[in-house]
Length: 292
Image (cartoon, rainbow, N blue to C red; front, side, top):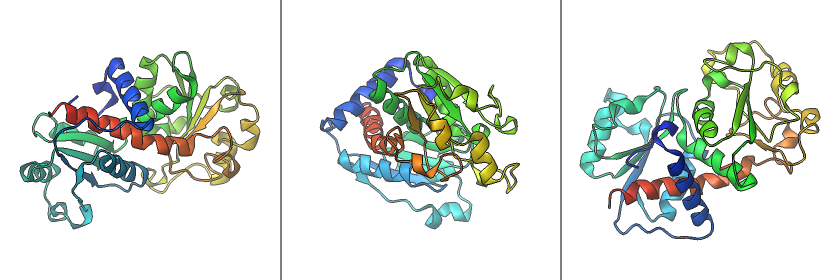
């Protein structure tokens, strides 16, 4: 694995290899890397979980982390992303984790630079490391994804999480379905009624309403959306006994999920965040092994 920019880059066997390695790191395994590598995180969009868990993963692997502040970089002078990456390649960076507002920004980089690229999220396109930590969380919970019913609810059209999970979860044997307002379904086939799918779902994965991508316009008030498409306390009571709640976060409390449910017994929201470090350690380890 030379880069990771989309879940479509990974075979099912590679996904399982990442899960196993993440579990090993969780159980206390240490890195097998023999060389000293230098990495950097280029985040052109806001991030807390992805950026910080990558930095923690890099430090746990004893990598040298070179800070990069987009607000003080030459991109403000008009330098292209490609030219910025070429500069960092010349300086000696081995891996770059990049989040960028442009969909498929990586098409201008992969195969054209020697530095490995890990996609930390591109516009509304892909978020492979979030998908992998979601998969790991479900696998950790149930021991398999085969035949598990995973219902993804919310702002589907603007969700790179939904796009990354749709393909990967299906290839791993899960049954994936989407629920959202008709104007937010994008290219997906989606149901418009939430209540009819609550009772038979093994996983309810709620998505944030991405107000920043709606140009300030939405057909729903927060209260209306919560009653129609949010995970209310009443809906949670109808869930299967062993079903779990997930959310990639950040979450809007009492919009896509009731405040009382964020840390309830069913919730794996903060477990997802914890798992993100181990999954990202596994990804970095696999990419860097290929450079030794």
